[in-house]
Image (cartoon, rainbow, N blue to C red; front, side, top):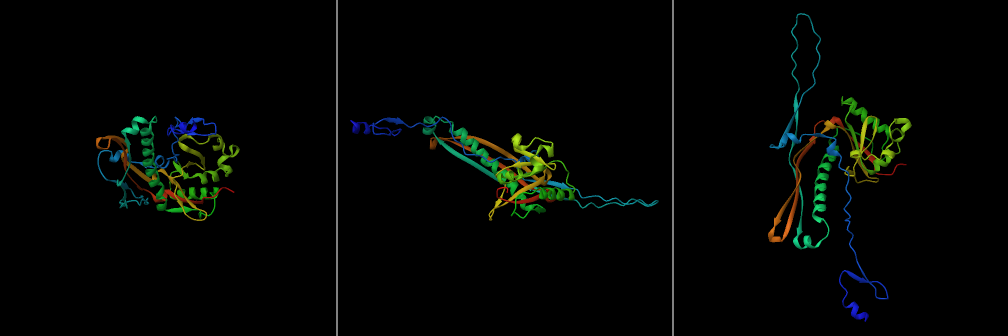
Length: 298
């Protein structure tokens, strides 16, 4: 009798004990979607999307030089100044796509909203590409702090702020982007987490979920993203980005837009998502390459 039962077992069942019980295997109604890093860099840089919304491949940003004051002498003409004006440019030359096919048979037989979930992941992949392109510009920073062999220190945060102050960078709209090890190290700094010192609710209480702005220290907003570049070493060196918004410019000409197309010859639907953008340094002295070790806080 057992042999007859075994001869009719379907692929979706399995024999699990000596009594011959047949137990069906079940697929959960909930899909486990790959975890995503927070995208923060595009939120803290100068945006110029409108400039290239309809045409163009290069944006020119005029840069007006400083003026000087000249002492007035009675009876003499004023001194005309020749400004040392220049420009910086951003080229719209980064074009990426993320696509997939969903076969008719699979679409008809699956109970999952597979296409919707995959389209979301494609959009995220392109958003991460934009974020990573911004964070990679740490190498163009005019200054750096930290050797990369030690954790984030409050002294280096103060130094990074001083470097921006020395360049007459506005005190507002300053940001510090770190990754998970940096977050843990920041939690070890009293002036960042203790209410009796800062007068603000600790990130340990607020959890920093509003746009993933994790907290503030010395007038600088801290953000956390695992897209921050990490240089291979022992321990690994993290290149956090300490910047004012005007340090970097970003122009997205064609946003992260999904499209669906019928592919009859393949009996499938094609889903394509793309982004066309440009990114570049506007003011290198408005940002600091903040180096720290990828090690747990001591």
